Image (cartoon, rainbow over all chains, first blue to last red; front, side, top):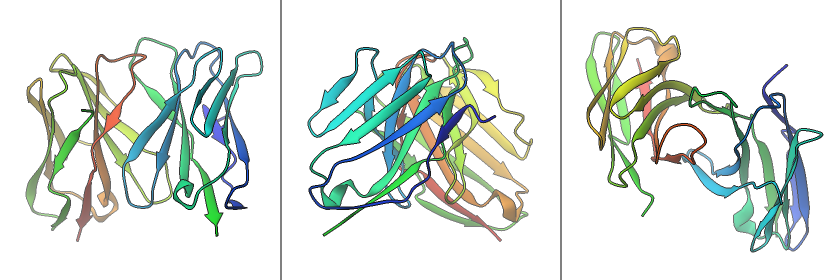
Length: 111
Length: 113
C-alpha cells in the first residue's frame, strides 16, 4: 500500500465551480500535512499546511480527518489559474525527516 | 522571502561528463534536500542535510555525490550518469528537518545523452 494515495483526476471544472478531492495516508503516526501545487514543468509550491482544526486561505479550505486518515482540499469559485496538479504531502511520522508525496491530483479549470 | 535558487536551469551532459548542480538559500534554514522528479511522478527524496551533515541517503547511486559547503549552499556532483537519470532535480530547504514546511527551488532540468 502506498503511503499517500490521491485520486489522479483529472477534474475538469468550469470557472466559478467548486471542486474538492481527498488524499489518504497510511501512517497513523504522521503529524504534518501539506498541500502543494505544481504547475507543468515547475517546482512544487506550498499551497497550505493542514491543521487538525481545518483551515481556510481565501478560496481554499483544507480539512484533516485523523480517524479516517485523510485530508481534503476544497477550491471555491475556481479560476483558470487554479489549473495545476495538487500534491498531498505527509510527513513520515518518525524522526527521519521524510515527506511522502502523493502522485498528485490534476485540476483543469475551463472558461 | 521564501526563495531557493538553483543553477543551472537546464543541463545537457554526456555519460562521461562531470557536472555539478548548485542550490542556495538565504532564509537561515538548517535543513536542505535533493529530490529527483520524473515526468508525471511525485518528487523522490535523494539526500537530506541537517546542520550541514548528511542525514539521509536514500540508497542513491554513487554517481550522484552531494556536498554541503556551508549552511546556505548545497551541491550535487554528477559523474558517469545514465540516460535514465534524466529528470528534474529539485532542491528544497526547511527551517529544521522533521515536521517543517519545505520550500522548493525551481529545479534543474537534466538531460543525459
